[in-house]
Amino acid sequence: MAEYTLVTGATGFVGSAVARVLQERGHRLRLMVRAGADRSNLAGLDAEIVNGDLTSPETFPAALKDCRYLFHVAADYRLWVPNPAAMMTANVEGTRRLMLAAQQAGCERIVYCSSVAALGLTKDGTPADETTPIEEHDVIGVYKRSKYRAEQEVLKLVREQGLPAVIVNPSTPVGPRDIKPTPTGQMIVDCASGRMPAYVDTGLNIVHVDDVAEGHALALERGTIGEKYILGGENYTLGELFALIGEIACVKPPRIRLRQSWLWPVAVGSEWLARGFGIEPRVTRETLAMSRKLMYFSSLKAQEHLGYAPRPAREAVADAIAWFRQHGRIDPV
Image 1: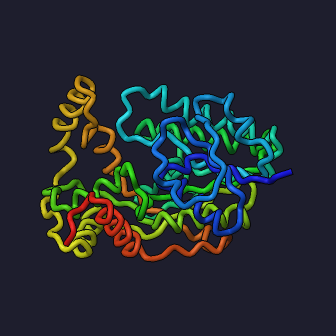
Image 2 (image 1 turned 90 degrees about the horizontal axis):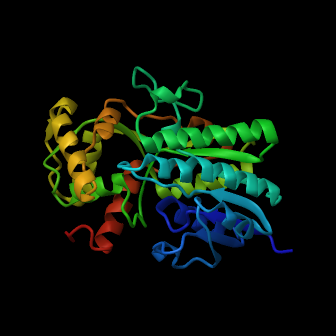
């Protein structure tokens, strides 16, 4: 009987990096892909492709047949969500149903890609870890709430039904193959293109997407069932990140720092236009509310227990800029 490793979300930014790391380790890959998804990130992967969708649980059994391992990386990731129910269905209910289907199919081990969005933050801005307390009412934004709820569902299945799952919590990955791009990738493109005159400062944790992928593989090989592992890199203020982007891309970074309160009317107007004309807003009330919190994290647990060793954030940003330049998103120097 063939033993496959199923990866969901392999057409995406993190999922494609995970699939490449697993291929290098000799896994026989099967990739669950949505019909109509952009498959550019699958180039160079030797894998069986099966159609599947988190909102279509009837596609799960065929995808999971003869699978020894499951890496669940797929998620509906958007910061502007006019229809929250659709995101909750995919990220929460889709994850729960996929976990149950994997257990029924006899998967030996599951690595679930959660997010630091599902974790608590400290009040004083010091780096949070896997044990930092969090309650759902503290979680800002539909996407973050969906990831929090999905992680809670996985933990509940581990406790109550013996689901053989390990959870990883990536921070803010940057690097190659960010085809959409992600919100962070778009910030890099805008800054490196000189199209960002001002910014609202906050704090975030930057990590190379390939290190996040390596962390997934290490979680399979060395992780403990039911444990969470933050896969992060270095903590930066947004101002520091833009200065780094400007240095690498040889452009002037934004100098004007705005207060969140100044942009509140702009966010309200942007959301109104988005609802009326279907244009994704660049700023929303939720993103402004999120920016008030410093999203700093520690990966010490993953480093000590998994052997996780992320490279400097500078390399992640440099690789992202190089990839965006190569693909025409940023003008050449």
